[in-house]
Length: 247
Image (tube, rainbow, N blue to C red; front, side, top):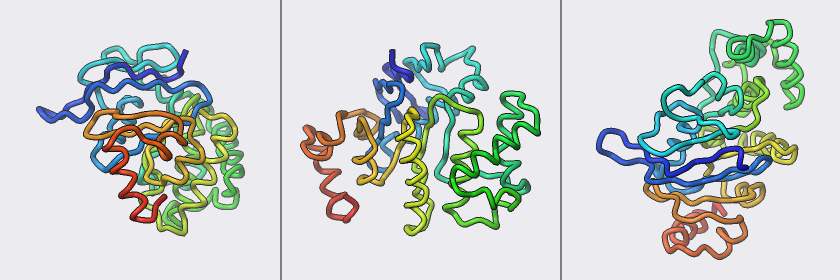
């Protein structure tokens, strides 16, 4: 059984459709990447999976249990499925270790001492042990995004959603963040991510999905999507990427 099941999902804002009948499965330990132009629905889909947006029709299931619609236990969902955003969204008035420890304390009821010990262990894993007492504004963008990834891992989720996590970074900081995601992929973390980093998507993904105007137009292994796309709109999108020197 897939860990994340997205079944005929529609999402509209008023009369404007954003997602139009999305069907997608993410197996355990699989990395699935969403690609497509800005406005194609990638971020909205991730937000729906995490319960940040209500869907208009269809169903989302996580771990075999319904994760959309009335009655969804959002706190339980977010313990199982962590999310990392484009912008780091760290609390500016808390130091790094408190930023990371807060979610396990609030969402899972972990005692503060245990949560902070877990936070320090995770920070060491991403090379930030010496930054634990720093405030967010004392870190580089790449360091802040690594803290955001650690914060998402602090609740010990079974899957991660990553929404364009390098798009707000200076180019020289992108590699340090992608290295962390690569390590997570190698460790077997289940991930659904949206990215414009096409070389990275080709390297780490088990499956790549091309979204166009809210429709999942094409999906397949990276060698097929990047090497022999079947849909003309996929080919046109990738031509633009190649011309821009991003693949």
